Amino acid sequence: MKKANRTESAADRARSDGAVERWRIIVLRLAAMLCFAGWTWVHFYWEGPYGILLWQDATYDLAHRLGISWDEFVGTGADDGWLQTWIARITWLYLACTVLTLTVRRKSYFQMAGLIGGSGLLAVLSYAKYVASQYQPPMFIEHGGQILAPVLLVMALRFGSGHRITVGTAMVALVMTFAGHGCYALGWWPTPGSFYGMISLSLGVEYETANAMLRVFGVLDFVVCVAIFIPPLRRIAAGYAVVWGFLTSSARPVAGMSWSLNYWGADQFLHEAVLRAPHFLIPLYLVILWSRPPAVEPSAESSGLSSGSSPPTDNASVASV
Image (cartoon, rainbow, N blue to C red; front, side, top):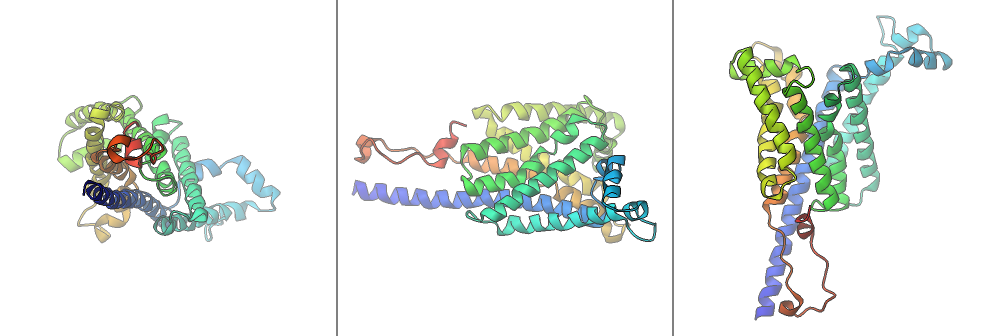
């Protein structure tokens, strides 16, 4: 009877573990998909921020060696030039990556490689924004969650959502996002005017109040970065990161959208929240992960197993991360 109960308990645990694993992967899949979808809209509706990297003499010299004239390179006013044409085509790469996040499975190695390439696209995009910001490190660092979102999905499918490599990468992604934001909020680098505008428009407060709130939020950003590595505090820190990541992402359309705009301004501002989905979905993945207690392996004596018992489950390995 006891053996039957243990067998039934193990089967229930296995089913429960499978359900939790699926939810973790769903969250990571959504994070990568929404990030790519948001940036796809940016490339389609406007243009990727690559001009700062491409509008250089070296780029034109390369085009000239390839036999491309100046008018063909920059355009004539009536037509887009070679540069704008190729930047526009990057839209299709982002759209393809968006689709891959929905279709990739555990043994889809070719699709996994495509998503790793998509992470590279996000890294180049972030580097362009970093250069445009006059080489401010927080500009690149705070994009870490977005850059690593597709990598996390691949890791979760390849190694498991509870594998220590996957969990460690998710923690790095969270720290990068919040550390970058915290540097700006504390004023260590010039705080973007959009930060003040979002707080003032969303909450209806004056500049002085918005500035004081930003300083407090900046301190909390770094508290999260430290607390995420302290086991008794990490679930609370990740929970705060979910809430704060969602609020800072949704503040963009809340502050910018208006009933007086075409489509209420959704075409101009909604994507700002969508592409920042990793800022709150990666912490949500960690909350789900750490909300489940690790499996307790029965001893050899109580289970009747020899010293060659099965290895610990993913949940057990997470306990030491």
